Structure formats: structure tokens, C-alpha cells
Image (cartoon, rainbow over all chains, first blue to last red; front, side, top):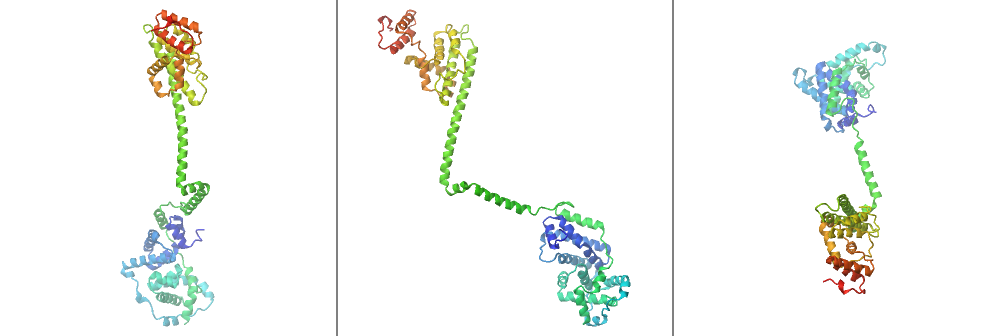
Length: 190
Length: 300
């Protein structure tokens, strides 16, 4: 029954003292949040530290929680802010807007169209996954964040914009460039 | 433009990119991190891991139960609402109830008081029975002390009889002494006149009310009773009718024929017991006002 409850209900139950609701909520989101943090900071120890900080923040702010927005948005907003704080303390990891390619048209022209079902894709799936992991790491930080928020948290463009404190158009642009680059790196096989 | 179409497909979840990302090797979280975070969460709400959650329905349920109870009380006791509507009537009823309660309480209290008096009198009477009527060197004192107590015991019994509604003193069973008269009769001979008089009072209580005596003798005996048993007199109310009975019983046998009575008075006069003779003569004149009295019996 608890597994079917919405995130917002679980968080409200936890706010009202139901520790079991937090357990369900945690197990539902721990994997995606941890991968989001790990792929962003690219360090397992740092990711664990940030991961614990994020959940501690959620626990402390339970009394102020209002289910006006999705819990996922709330959770990743906290994670984004914590990540930004961490990166600010380390200039070498600073998010670079310069890496973002604004020339969408030229990029779009360079990515080939999906060739459809190809047996080679299935055979080379393992190799593609390895390439994708490398390309995700190679993405500019903001584009990677938008892509991870979309893939790990399942956020919409509006929610990504809300989490990252940008306009929906900016969020859409970042996500579109991230997808185009990945497709390009994968040779149009996906 | 094809990029836009691919991006729309990606947003709709129809792109192979999402499928490929889902196949990425999962990065597992360390168990100790799970345990630490869950412990912190449970500590924050004051619950142990695995503890049952709070009953969220408890407060609404209690409110509903309270409301239900209030409605039931209002339905079951409409008189309460009526009393609230007319406080003056309620006040009058309350006062009447209190007065009834006071009456019952007072009756119970008086009954209890009379029982206590009776108990005290019995105890004193038992003591008086155990003691000899005359002690060496004390000719009349013990008897004087004992006799009024016995009289008081009888009197308290009479009081109780009056309060509980029995018919008369004589009808009440002699609780203090099963047969005081024979014992007194034996003792009378050893008693001085005053003691004999007091013993006569006690035994006279058991006699009928038809016996009469002079007013002076009655008053003196009554005073003697009040002096010698003040404690009992104070606690037990003293009915007038009983006192009259006692007074009447002070005199000698009034059923004596006139001639025998006159002979007795004459003998008393000859023995020098002028006071007794005078009292007997007064009682005789009262008893037989038309009977001629010899001049020789007149006592100055």
C-alpha cells in the first residue's frame, strides 16, 4: 500500500511522524539521486557525501514541506543546490557555460538520422553503453545535468528549469544539445 | 529540422537513447550509507526503525466519539436542558430535595444519638449491678449512685421507644436488666431511706401509669435524677411523660385500701418518720379526697 502511495503523500506521512514513509521514499529515489550526483562530480566519495547531505537536508526540512510541487522536484532542487555549493568550493569543477554549444542548427545537421532497426546495434550494445558513459562524462556540466535530471529523475522541461533555476527555454536548449551530442557520439545508432 | 523531430521523440520517450541509458551499469549505493540515512530519519521523528507509525485516525475518531457522547447525553437527560431553561424551578426543586434529605438525616442522627445514650446507660447499669448495693462504711452512697443510673437507662430506653414509635415504656423489653425488680427488692432492706426511694423509682418504672404520687415528691426525685446523672440527662432529651411516671412511682402502693394506708401512716408517725408520713398522708388525701382522716394523723 505504501509502495503505491505518491511521493508527496509519503513525505507528508513522514512529516507527521511516520518513519516508514521515509523508508519507502528513500528506497524509491536513492538510486537515481546517487547516480545523478556521481555522474556530476565523478567521484564516489564526494557523491556519497553529497548524497547524505541531501537526505539530511530533506529530513531537517520535513516540517516546512508543502506538497505544492512534486517531491522529485524538491529532492533534486536540494541536490542541485548542494552540488553547486560543492563545485563553488572547487574551481576546477566549476560549471562552464562556455562549453555549451549554442549553434543548434549546425549540430542538428551533423547528427545522422536513426537508421531504424539494425542488427549491428544489438550486437554492439555493450560497446555503445561504454561510449555513452564516456560521452555523458564529456558533456558540458549544465547539459549533462539537464540530461541526468531527465533520465534519472524523469523531470519534464519545466521541472528541470525549476530545479536548475532557469527558464524552460534554457532548460530545453540544454537538454536538446545534450541529446544531440550523445546521438552524434553514438554514430546515430540510437 | 530532423534534430527537432528526434528531440521531440526523445521527450516522448520514443528515442533509443533513453533505452540505452537504462541499460547502463547501475551504480549501487553502499549499505552503510543507507543505514546511516535511515537511522537519522528515524531519529528525527523519534521512532525506532521498524516501529509502527502513529495512528493518524486517533484524533478524528476521538472527536467523533466525543460528539456522539455529547449527543447521547443530551438525548438521555432532557431534564438537564429543562433545568437550564428554568433555573428558578430547578432551584426550588433542589431546595426541596435538600430539605427532605436533611429531615431524613436528622431522623437518622437522632436515632443514632438515642442508641448511644442507651448504650452508655446500659454500661453504667451493668457496672451498678456488679457493685454491691451497700458497702461497709458507706451506708447509702453506692445505692444512691447506682439507682439514678438505672433510672437513666430506663429513661433512655423510653426515649428510644418514643422516637421509634413504640407504644409505651412498659411494653419495651427490659434490655438493661432482665429482672431488676427482684434484685432491688432484696437490696432494699439494706438501703437507707433515700436509696430505697431511688430503688423504688427504678422498680416503679416497670409498673403501670395508674400509680400516682404527690407533686413535691415527684419534683424532688426528678431533681435528684438530674443531679446524679447529668451526663445522661444532657445527651438524651427527657420526655415529660416519663418524668411524671417516675414521680408517680415514688409513692408507696396506692392500691392499698384506705384503712390499711391510714394504719401505715400512723405507724410511720409513731416510728418518727415524719417526713415519710407527711408525704404518705398527702398522697392519701390526693388518692382518697373524700375519705375522712383522723385528727391524730395530722402532722404539723
